[in-house]
Length: 173
Image 1 (cartoon, rainbow, N blue to C red):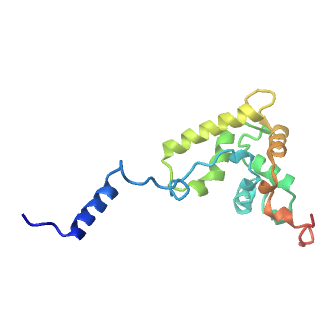
Image 2: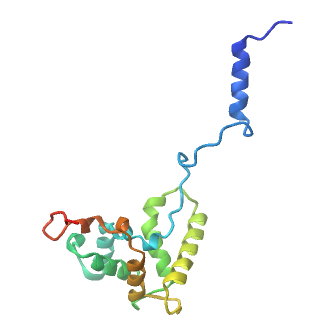
Image 3: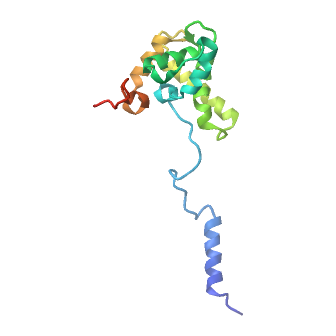
């Protein structure tokens, strides 16, 4: 009986370890490229930093506007107004969902199926209404929206453009 060379045995064991899920080493979850659906995006002020999206949408409402020189509160107002499709000064669930979709679509791309995206949008919309609709009427007023933005704001979610004052120089802390 002839012996199998050592390197063939080693190769065989190595291949078994790689292909056998029981003995294979699990991947580091941080190194995984599986996309994670962002949470609490409605309260993240960075969602309104896409001035071009807002400017394009506002063209249909008020004409050309340059959002580079407006305050954070003005940007919030425009973001709210752009998603108030029926112009009743309230955001209902569908309008909140549209705002979330507009804000996340570029981030998510094709990483999730349409069904998974819709499930997340519905869950996030329900969460926004549960937490931020203070009078529980099923609508978000601008005051409720701003209250939620101020309540959940953190230094990491403040707009980058607000790190500069109106003259363009950095604010000192």
